[in-house]
View 1 (cartoon, rainbow, N blue to C red):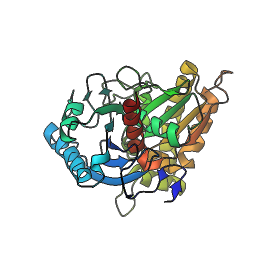
View 2 (cartoon, one colour):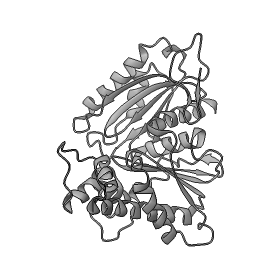
View 3 (cartoon, rainbow, N blue to C red):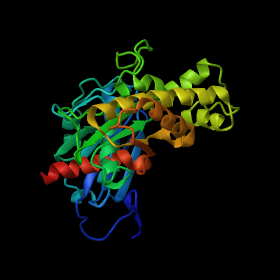
Length: 327
């Protein structure tokens, strides 16, 4: 079986029991993904459903149950010893509940209890999606070998997680490192979290696109108003699209620099759909860091793209489940 350096062994089935197999769920405002993941980070079976984010709580949960049912149809299901969940947040890992900003039907929703029931009573570990991505990048990605790191997911929302002294640091409720709701604009616009001037309000894909549209950017004939479309326009030289990415990068840089000053990270890893813009995002982000991260102990901070790609949430959820099982 071939091995990918970022994501472990290639997808596929193997004969006999699979060592360290766990069920992984990645729950976000756009999609609910699930997988059976082995102990080396190999994704053996996948399933996915769109997130019915504007529907009621039971409708969203049915999508999760459909993903689990599809995974359970695999002959490998019986080898899986635990379930890991990386969910959009905030989450409360202690209580087993979630209240994702982008899934309004779930408020203090007892996700761990419901998933445990749907997964045949297996033990369930819950972390925020940013913490899950951080676990994946520290295990198999760009933060591997770094003892102090911040990893960010910049997508429908903005999440994050921390590695401190060589260990994942989820915090008491599983939300530590949630940079998306760090305030970087004291007089900024209201955020969906109830705060004002948050990183997410400036840097998430939907908000980046909203700002471009409000300032006069117009999509092409296909009507695509995604962050990817704004990135394509920026690459083609559209000044409004470029300005929208500059502003997003500035917000991210301010949040990263503040985090570095607080806990002395030496690397920031940025993933998620918006990070797919490449240098349209990373060039102004590095310039912003040069302006904000000026103290001697943060001046050498580096920022790099994530390596685990769209599988980061699944791999991180698997890592969290495996760590819990090992304790």
